[in-house]
Image (cartoon, rainbow, N blue to C red; front, top):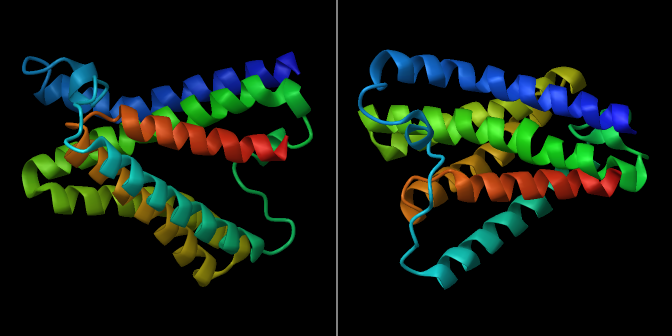
Length: 203
């Protein structure tokens, strides 16, 4: 089981480096002298939202809708189709360290940096928040939906699993930018926790 954790650690670090590469080069070329990279990418202390209660309520509703709709779609997938995180199936408690690395680093951190930290901010900087958030959400959704659509040879699956993560990715972008002052830490926490819990179920 130690080998599984080590493999996941290496995989998570590799994916993080790959997802950081384009943002870092972009920052190096045009923003290096204007702002520190960590802050530029959104890894900063969140601002306190105007209404914490409303923010928590909206987040709870969005998470519930997303999980419920996703479970319905997952149940309709053909037999033999495996989802991300299923590689830890059957490991039991010994798989928890690997599941944490998968949820919070390989998927959570790397994807939040690329989509909410880089794409959203750079596009919004030029074309406005609505365009930036929509583009990053669509790209985020396609990252999930296109591979599943190809694996199942189903346009319906591709559309469903593009719209669901895409819609939730839009919400995460809105949450970061409109409630927490541009910090990606809130969406990283939500993203990582959800992925970890989903993976934990399969252990």
